[in-house]
Length: 71
Ligand SMILES: [Zn+2]
Image (cartoon, rainbow, N blue to C red; front, side, top):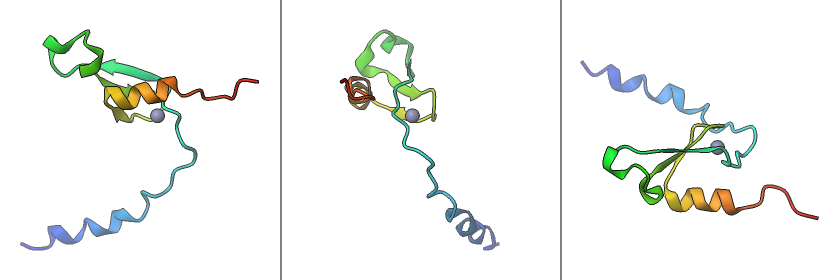
């Protein structure tokens, strides 16, 4: 019964392709626990564009970082 471990290796090669870096500016707040709702520091931030999940500190960086230079 050792054949199951072998099939995993084949699918590793394709995960390095990333077309463009996502700025993660379309973040949606989610809470796992109802008692945490409304507490932005305990929220999980899910990027609507790429599906990435971030904590509060990471999300704050993405939102504060200007995506376009102001001239
Ligand atoms: Zn993103």
